[in-house]
Amino acid sequence: MRLTGIILKGIGGFYYVEVGSRIYATRARGLFRNEKIKPLVGDRVEIDVISEEEAQAHIQKILPRFSQLKRPEVANVEQVVVTMSMASPSPNFILMDKLLVLGQYHGVTPVVLLNKIELVTAEALEKVRRDYEATGFDVIFVSVKENTGIEALKKVLKDKVNVFAGPSGVGKSSITNALKPGLELKVGEVSGRIGRGRHTTRHSELIELPSGGYVLDTPGFSSLEILDIPKEALKDYYPEFQEASENCRYRDCSHISETDCGVKTAVAEHRISRSRYGSYAYLYEELKKQKERY
Ligand SMILES: Nc1nc2c(ncn2[C@@H]2O[C@H](COP(=O)(O)OP(=O)(O)O)[C@@H](O)[C@H]2O)c(=O)[nH]1
Ligand SMILES: [Mg+2]
Ligand SMILES: [Zn+2]
Figure 1 (cartoon, rainbow, N blue to C red):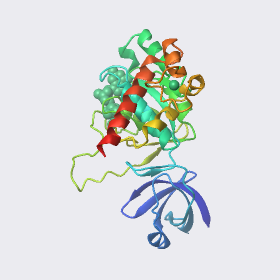
Figure 2: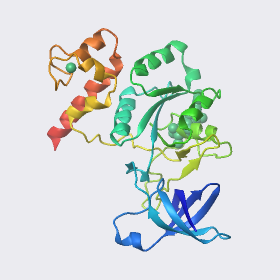
Figure 3: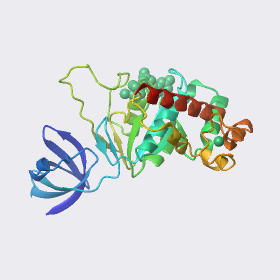
Figure 4: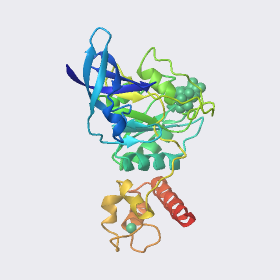
């Protein structure tokens, strides 16, 4: 019997494939070893059931991937939830914007998530909401501590494969736990290469949410990941610049040092956030230096 499912995790040569509410322990058929393609968590696969009682199957085919991340290696991620806390630690909006660029670059839809909102004033939240309003990205405010905003987050994650991204301590594990009662991911743990040891390979796993959709149990992008794009392409990842750039004198305006720049005018007139423009200018400079170094 041939079925279609999704790989939730891979351990010791086995891939655990979910089909409806059943999970099959599968092996990839020998044919994959000859090809250069290896099944990944997140892959949609066709499997042939060997034993229904023992829930064993073979993977016959990997369906085409529409995205692929490297660290962790996961396929078909649709959404990256870029997470910061409003305080403790304070939000790093340059890193936020860099991760938003990285997500889009990998073909993944970004979502802006702010946690620990009970620690700051309503004005502070309003400022962030305004800064990101024109991007068109979903912006969600939550407090795990006070259990606010979790329902809105569930709606945004529903029916999609999601990963969280963001620095340690902002509450990614706490949020994931709040989405799935009983999960009990460790809170207060430094994410990333645990223990540094060579033998502590971390296996990522997709977690199915009761409210619909999946989240990966490890952060999706390293905060240290290098943005590997030409500086000229950076502006394409700031959606709110598009309209304003129609007023730039030069068609290939970088919005940095040119005169008659529609984007800079929009910043001066508060139609584009100063903070967003600031991160753009910062990352542009970083990309420029990066290129000079190599
Ligand atoms: N004040 C406050 N603390 C929180 C909230 N959510 C998580 N924390 C705390 O923040 C710390 C880091 O949380 P954790 O989930 O491990 O963050 P991660 O490193 O991003 O996975 C822990 O001490 C949590 O208890 C919140 O909404 N408000
Ligand atoms: Mg964590
Ligand atoms: Zn311009």
